[in-house]
Structures are given as structure tokens and as C-alpha cells.
Image (cartoon, rainbow, N blue to C red):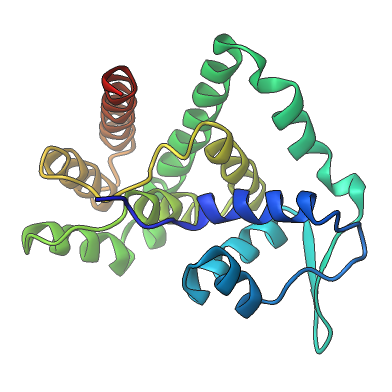
Length: 217
């Protein structure tokens, strides 16, 4: 069964549509409703994707007028990534390692902040696991980046996650629950070293699983 498209996938779809329809800086882009109908996804997913593009400075919303493509100079980082960085395997590994640096920095920042480390969201994730429920890997990782409070790091991470193949697509599986529980427990104890090592273990496990899946197909 195919996993439903999540916002990182939709971000790329929207960018592709902008290119194909030759939408220029200053032009209005299709509305949430139009995008949802064209891409056949829910409006909440479209809204999340548009929020990411706005955070990156690629689009801007004008109240009462709609959403518009921003000045081309704001696309520079995106174009550098898509045109030059991903030309070989070493570059792709560099993107993955750079993404991981931001993720580890985020979890350490959360552990070092008493308020952030005790937010209800961590207990909510843990309780879902205890009750046998699953949640999207992407939601968990995005909470880490958002709640770390570093807006620039979040912008960079969104780009790096896109260009490293959206490594967090799909829901957590039973093979991952113990790793996630250990990460959550370390966050709530404000144990930055244990949280970082647990996150590294999980990220490396996902990368290994992804590589094996690619070899099988």
C-alpha cells in the first residue's frame, strides 16, 4: 500500500508545477483549493507545504489578494542545491550528514531548555506508542526542529530533507518504537547526550533500511 503524500513531497510537486506553468516572480500561484484538486491531496497538506515554501522565502501571502511567487533572488539556495550539490554520491552523503548536524543540534537545544524538554508533545508521542498507535516520522522530526527555536536551522533542514529524498516518509514501525521511546525519555530527562546518541541510532537505522529497500527494488 502506498504511503499518502506528505508535505515535503507536496513542496516538490508545487515547485515543479510553478516551473512547468512558467509562473514568474510576482505572479499569483494557484489557491489552496486549486492545488488540492490538481495534486489530489487534502487542503491541510497543501497548507503545510505552502507554509514551508513561505518560510523559505519562496512565496509570499498578501491578505485579500492570494499567494505570490517571491523575487527570484530568494530561490538561490534552492537552485544551488538542485543544480550543483546533488551531482554525485559523495555530495548526497554530504547533504545527509549536514541534515543530521541540524537534527542533533535541535535535540540538544531542546534538552538544554527546561520548558522545551517538558512540553506535552513528548509525552503525547510516548503515550501513542504505549497505546499501540503509530505516528508519522516526519511529524516527530519536524517537532524537534520547530521546538528547538532556531528558525534558520529549520529553513535549512526543510531544504536538506527535500534533497536527501525525504528520509522520514511513512509511519514508525514496531521495529522503531523502542528507539523512539528511548529518545523521548532522554528528552524529558534533559539528558542531551543520551537523546543525541538515540537519535543518531534511529537516523542510521532508517538510512540502512532505506538503502536495503533500494537494493531490493
